[in-house]
Length: 414
Image 1 (cartoon, rainbow, N blue to C red):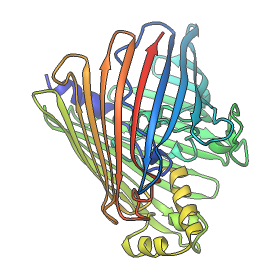
Image 2: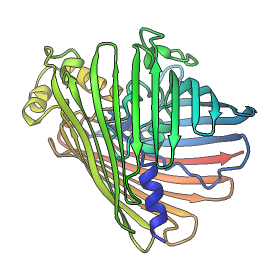
Image 3: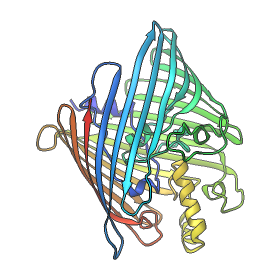
Image 4: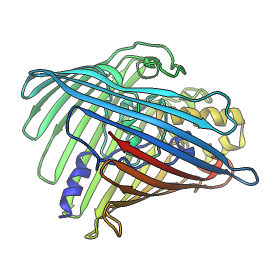
């Protein structure tokens, strides 16, 4: 039945913001076929990569070996512990030394005081949002990417640093209320390979409240309110609807007073005003088990055509500073973007999945295109991927040093 994948999508659609560093890498469809029962989930992954620069120049090659582990275990009745960590060992042509990075994704204790009351304490990856390509209400995404190994929206949300926080939830039939507080624990990010990097995720105190109530089988809204030190409160809304058994419609919005990305990147004066961000679209599943997603993305803090053109013609240092800041906060660099995604499960043969993604910048008309074919065995995945970046020099995707990237990877589940 087509309704099952749509219900799953409505419940857990992932997110991604345009990320300049990630734009140089290939996506990776996270596989669940080898998910095993028990407290542990462990896999290792080996990848080889070739990138071809724009114009003349030799192809560059790189390798990566990763180890990803997650423990979710019961300590005592009502008590649970979660630990998730990822180690990436990277090597590249012409690079001196190495670029090894450890990401402590989660480490927290959970107490279920009552069946409908839960409290969590520790490093938690708090994810919010129902859109696929960009999540304005995913407030804890800022500074959380320590090692980008994939463009896949689900991978970016999964393989990132959690924030140290205290979170409490109360549940009832069809709804929930969540409150969390994340204190300041550091001043600046760390480049040390095995640092917990609390300066990246807990550089200031933040809080969030989220309320959801299912209105019907086809309509499920969630309201959020988030704020913190040096920040005006931001109001968010997540809404999913099922107009029929083949279609999920999603709408995600966040609004509040904030400076533009240019002002936050310190390349223009403070211009604080009320700004909106949104992502809205739909996912349609065909009878042939193909899911098609189209999504419009708007970032009111990003640059419009005139500002973007002026920045591209201006100082290279200012241009790089702006792109770097947008990458760190995982916001689109420009104001209007289009995201397209297609996923075909069991394409032509069983266990073969094919996925394709397009990111189109509606301001400068540059484009990122990606294609993956992945075959699943019981404990092994093998994937081939390719990515193409097109656009004028200095455009969102045309500024990428690599025009074409190829990657092959092998993942083994223990």
